[in-house]
Amino acid sequence: MIKLISACNSEPAYAELARISQASIRKYCRKHSLKYAFYQIAETERAASWYKIKFLKEELERGDAEYCLWLDADTLIYNRDFDLRTLTRSGKEIYVAKDDLNINCGVLLLKNSALNRKLLDKIWGMTHCLDHPWWEQQALVDLIQADYEGIRERIEYVPQKTFNAYIYGLYGKRHEAGEFDLDSFVVHFPGMPLVTRHWKMTELSKPKQAWKRRRLKLRRFLAGLGFNVNCSATG
Image 1 (cartoon, one colour):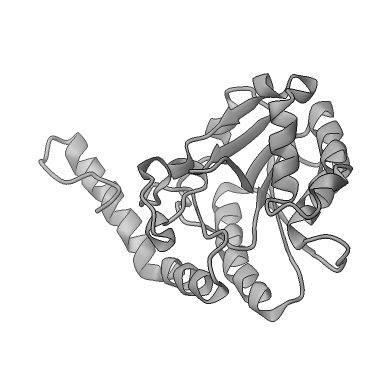
Image 2 (spheres, one colour):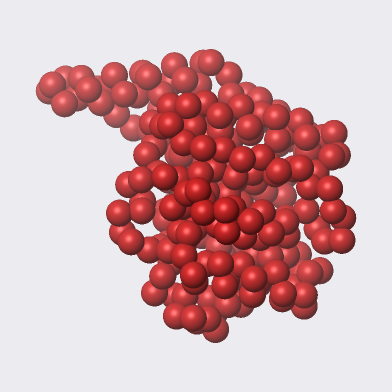
């Protein structure tokens, strides 16, 4: 069983992003019969991003799922046909994507294992990263570089376009390996102004987006029958 986890603080603008994100998560969970837990971040001793470490540790200790998928409040599950279980067949313990800079922990799939429980404790204790611009993400980067507990052999780097896609044009960049398309499981907007995140998440949540996915599936079906149709996920 895979359980999806997300959280948000009480700031109204972030709470609105979380509302949009939660709606997409719930739809996905209903389709695939998965559990979902949402946490309210009440503490303020650390940047909000750090609390994913605390909540993931709590969920792993609860023990009601074999894997836990973390999703930041500014993520949107776009492709509800994507089956997370296809990832776990590789037998790895950590699944994460790399963007054009390094790993991004806004979408993070962890196996409920002794390694990951120990890893989360270790990250939480790395207080020298508290004020780093990448927060807990930098702590994980440091541990990967140090090959903590043989972590390099236990990670699968999932293609960003598949797992944690960005709309790179919003950043004034081009990075085809991570660019959002109609097959992307999650689209994510880290570092964007809140108004931009809200605009794009709202736009990509509209019913017309589901129709785009249905048209793509139909085109691929017709292509399988021998018809000459455009099956690109980009249009």
